[in-house]
Image 1 (spheres, rainbow, N blue to C red):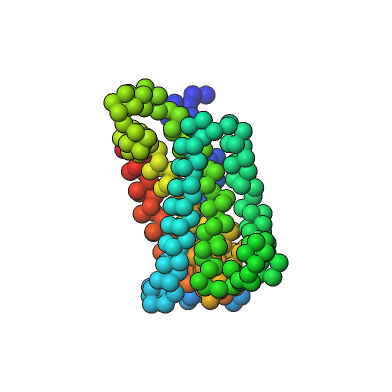
Image 2 (tube, one colour):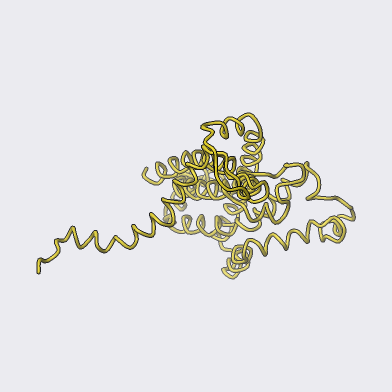
Length: 279
C-alpha cells in the first residue's frame, strides 16, 4: 500500500474543514449574490432574470438613506465607547482598584438582546427610568430626532468594556521607564500622554477601533429590538433593511442585491483592517 506524501496527508486533514466551508459559507454566499440579479419572492415559486435592475432600484431609492443611518450609527457607536473605554483604561492603569475592572465588564457579559430589553425599559415613554429621573414624558424611541441617539447610547453601554480591556492590555505593555524619563525631563501629565502614551498605543488603538467599527457596521440585534428600524426609517441600517426586505417584504431579489452592496462596503473596511494589522 502506497504511503501518502506530506502534501496529500495535509490535504486529507483539511478536507473536512474545506467541505464545511464550501457547504456553509461559499455556496450560500454565491447563491445569494446570484439571486441579486433575479426577481424572486419568498412566497411565489420561480424567478425571473432582471440583470442589474435590483441594484438600480436600490441606488435610486432606499440605499442612500440606509447608508447614512448605518454610518451615523457606526461612527457614534464606535467613537463614543472608544473614548470612554480609553479614559477608563487610563484610570485603571493609573491605580484605580482592580475590582472595578469586573464591575466595568458587567455590561459586556450580558447578552445583547437582554441589554436591548433593559434599555427598552429605561427609554420607555410611559414608565421608563430615564423619564422618571428627568420628570418628563419624552418618547425617546418614538421620535426620529432621539431614536438614533438612544440606540447609540445602548450600544455604547454594551461595548465600551471590551474596548477598555483591550486598551488597558496595551497600556500595561508600556515600559514605566518611558513615563519616568519624561517626568524627569519636566513633562506634565498631558505632555506625557501626547508624547509617550499615544505613540505607544497608536497601533493597538487603531486595530481596536477598526474592529469595533466593522462589527457596528453589521450590527443588528440592538437596533431591531429597540426600534425595528423606525420610527419612519430613522434607525434603519443595512442589517435591518436586508432583514425587512427579505422576511417582511418577501423580496429576495432586492434583499440579496442590498446585501451584495453591503458586502462590498464591508470588504473595503476589511482591507483597511488587514493593512493596519500587517503594518
